Amino acid sequence: MKKVAIVMGSDSDLPVLEKSAAVFKELGIPYEAHIYSAHRTPDEAHDFAANARKNGFGAIICAAGMAAHLAGVVAANTTLPVIGIPCKSAVFDGMDALLATVQMPSGIPVATVAVNGGANAALLAAEILAVEDEELAGKLSAKRAADKAKVLEKDSNLKL
Image (cartoon, rainbow, N blue to C red):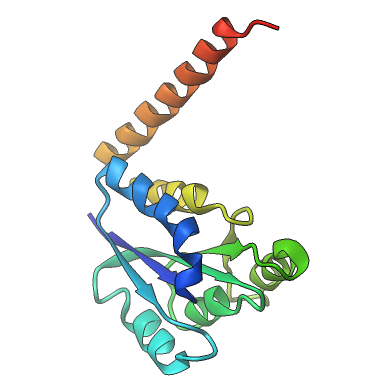
């Protein structure tokens, strides 16, 4: 199975990406986490992205706040799927990061999940890998069924 890269622009993004890591652990997906800044370590971010495919990655998750250029920088240097997580900050409540992540120029796509959407980014990466991995596809189906059962149980216990 291909592994997934979790790349954050700063360690302040770690609480969001811990949710991604938890999903990968639950599904048995190998991953690596790194801190590379689009602005403070552009050479390292470029090199990581340019070599990601040959280093065994199947998808890359990038999380950043404020200017949030990390996902775009990574996507510009690889043809692997890149999933951007805009992170909420004290400035503009995450809207700046959302717009920076979602507004990519034609030819350099970045899939974007919700602000602080670490779990959904991991699930999307898992779905991408599951296109060619029936065992992983089965795990995703089982997770959906378990999530459905939890909601239905809460519904049956609801008393107003």
